[in-house]
Amino acid sequence: PLEFINGGHGVKNPLATEANARQREDEKNKQVLISEDDPTKFVCRICSKNFTLQRLLNRHMKCHSDVKRYLCTFCGKGFNDTFDLKRHTRTHTGVRPYKCNLCEKSFTQRCSLESHCLKVHGVQHTYAYKERRT
Image (cartoon, rainbow, N blue to C red; front, top):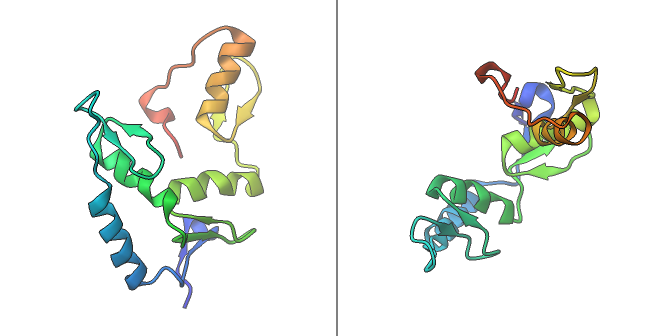
């Protein structure tokens, strides 16, 4: 049976089995590489991207997995992070939760709002606590 997530706009991939989860865990155990230049940074062994926290590296490592854990119910595109699926779903639903308080524009991603505020209004957008991602 399919297990729906993200308000019904995503499903857990039935092909992402326990065996795949164990394989991912084995890969995760091999991934930790502390930067020689900066011992406070963690480096992805696959793409060399740097992270300041181990948990951010762990989250990033999911993007290198061949079997995606979550699938979009609109188009079938796969993701390994539920937030990436949620953000992608907005391209289908038209939900634009990031609203400019200086004009009528709204955006699907926070970085797009921040870029808009800087380019169009010449101001850096700062977030109140309640304005975090939804």
